[in-house]
Image 1: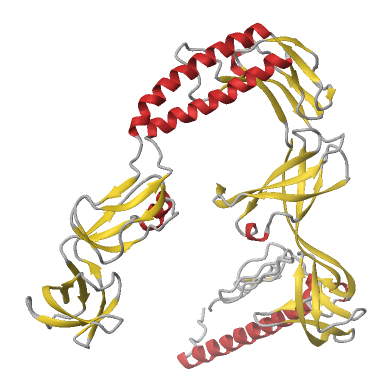
Image 2: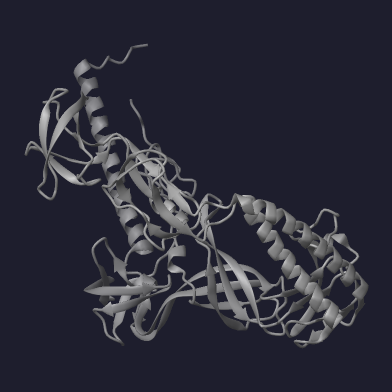
Length: 554
């Protein structure tokens, strides 16, 4: 059998070139087709010519408000707890929970014998306290402040009629003495040596001779007499350097109680040990004396309460309202201790027991949490709308009555408590859930548009006032000035008039993406370039329409 003649290398090379050209032409045709298909797809599905996506809006006049919202539970305001000394016993209650009472109505009668026993116990405690007060009175603060050393008065902070503790809080001293006879000033230079003499001129033009006492780290310290130069005066050294005078060895004169009745010295005067500096009035006693005195005042109030109970023989309602609860006075947990009034005998005459709780039914409050981005917009007195879902759709009007500027953390965000108060209705009960909307800002008779109709950039806002149905293009761009926004509508303060019509593309959440050369964008249609298409699209990496194979070589 004869063999076919072998092709020459030139023929093979020519054949390969022809095949390569064919492949490149096919790829070029496919790319052109893909671009055309993509353009048509985007135009049909996302182009501005789609009339269904073009919206129109007319500039109208209306009210627009901005709010801060939150939710919480209703609580009754101004609930009155009627208390008696825990050593007093109730004879008979005349009210029950949910009863309505008027101010002055009898709530219960008391056991007068228990009142007499409590009075005797309180009187004993008063007698004992009086003895302790007599002993503590010897610890009274002196009515004069004297110098314990010799020196010169350089600063006097306390003046007649000043409260000693207030002066101490503001200045840390009542006055300051200079002990070694020198004022000092530091200047920023190292050009001097210790012992050098310099000329120091104060702000009044008076000259003093100073001596360099130290040079360290580029700072020179100069001493001069304390007789004349004023504390914290700015001085000039050798007509070149400036600094502020301070006391070289200061001594602070301090105090803690009383009122300054007179100052016995003046600034720049010399004093010796024992010299009276200040005269005081209204001097307090020792801390122990003050504590004993406070305890006696509380016992006096308790004594007066017991006297009133004994005389009336009953407990009367201090307000009008509804009885929320009636306590079992035999339950010790209902007692509230009053500090320092239990007495040596261990009596509980100094503690109180809540016997009746009365709700005046006037107002209720809701506490909501406001985050840090809004809290500075909230202020006491702002109007608020409250809805209570368990009652119905009715909206109640209240106001902000308290803004707590102390932050707490919630999910990594700082939040603040805001209290809103509303007039109570018969349907409102403590514990009901309520939603609150606080009006932060509002505008009446404003020109408004849907917020989507206004396009914004970093420097301006604008709207489109024309639309070409043929080309699908928006035009007639007009710059506008915007005002308040509530997230849905926005105020137009300039650029448009009532009745003007604007056009805009409705915001849609379409997730169209495609991939080409490393950029990826996908859509629910599954169209992709440079990857795969599970939706029967086109794969430029190997398959067209899921069926055509592109050769990769010979």
